[in-house]
Length: 257
Image (cartoon, rainbow, N blue to C red; front, side):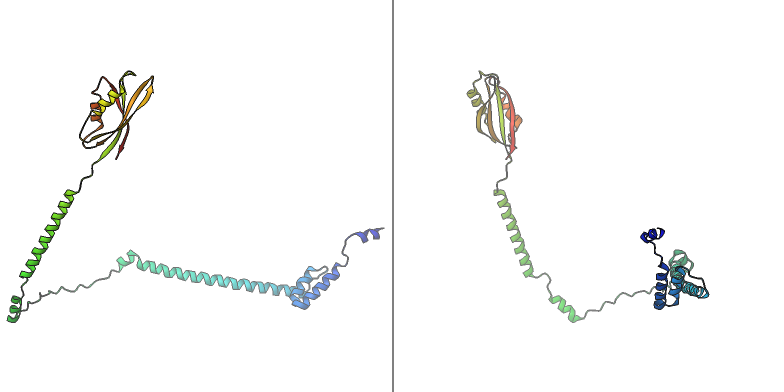
């Protein structure tokens, strides 16, 4: 019954056989070093002299690799140190203290007096040639007079043209609200009074009656004025003079033209 139980269990009884076969395969492929490694890992492996020798070889090989890497690190450190020393020496040479310790002397040569150039004596022939040249000839004087006359003529024409051009007049469009005292005020008479105001720079436009309330209507009238001649204060003052018909005057709209 125990045998039947072991048959159903998943136990590898022949594992050591497969381990020996694997070790032999690696020994044939990689030599005794690889074989010794697998031999040490297999079941029933013994630590004989051959195994110790192979482990020693492996350790020596690893130490040589580490030694080579350490040599490379040392060489890099030596190169960095030499670069730092060269840079330090260069900084010491270029520092102000080093310059102060070894100032460079400049030899100043004595100044030499420069003699002015000697004026060459003019020969009689050159004097005669200079006399023949007329720098202020009559032709040049005539040309200058003609140019001055043309310039003055053009300036005069420009001034006349500018004087004839009409100047721009600033104008404004004003919408006035003229309110009566009550609903019994004659609005036609009120409008006639307003239009009777005649001023330089004032032009009356259209008008209409606008209901306010309780049967009262106000006069809304348009006018155009020149800003330099007629102002809003002057308009209000002239309209409010008609006290029998006008209660108040308001500016409903004001626009520049």
